[in-house]
Length: 206
Length: 205
Image (cartoon, rainbow over all chains, first blue to last red):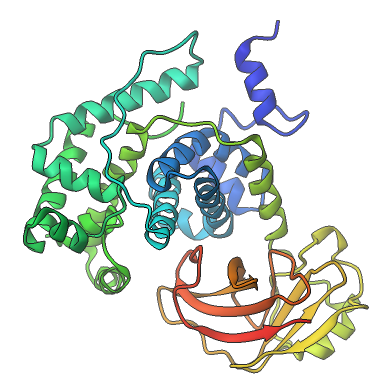
């Protein structure tokens, strides 16, 4: 019997190839990518494409620019997966770092920056797949951790990460010395790391 | 002791010069290097706080297509005598980034048009469907933390066309008639738009 998940996966994957690499760890998938395996690149995209696109869209606020950012980031993954593997970081962190940097580069050139608060978690509609449930849980953990940060640290982090502002622009915008902005971002991001560790957050897709 | 600047770097909140300066600092500071990994994890986690959104279905295909075109494959030297002669490539180069169309990699380059570049000693070869190879002579290796990135500029709009890692590179996007091919120095990983000066330019007709 075909269920909704199967149908969705079918449409996400190239014709005929179901997610055969679904059982592999992110590291293993990335190792295949570094050897030029296109199916592995597709698998990585299936795992992080929606988060990547949601992030890029949040920053650039334009569907076409957001797709450019995601495409360029995944192409960078394809080109340099081998050198990344040697550094032994987390693949998801790396992929999202690349997406973020591309999106910020684009938005700084286009002068589209805005500073809206992040959307609160909405109620799920209909039945969620495993992946959707996992993403939703991740979202909840990160949003809760953000809420636990001192407001001034949270503000600096959100304006920088989601708004694409540089530290100097933030200092000017908030009317604070640059050193204060640096300290808030540093203390806030380090505290966020601790809170995420306490919540047992892992960024690898299930 | 982790430098405070590491958090701003992890959040991409440094401008170009600051980021470059921090990257140089990073090379000699193992504390920062380790600390940065942790801060990057926290920064990347912020991506998960945003509503995940399904992009257009064509994006997946575009990514896989551009991946296929950027494939690194050995150049079948024996069957490309003309190309090699024209390009005067260093014979020691064992593997080059090759073939816009890997499935055609065995074809001889008959029908390529040749353009000289300005700014550096280089030759651009463009095939009938826009597939292009750039051969560069005596370009110094890029400084640490930087790469040579290729651009196809059409109507004033530069689009990334892959990296130049040796004397010969195949562009990852076709070069339409009248477009300009250029090379600039960019941070590792490349940039979506040129941020450094264009070191060489080849204008096609």
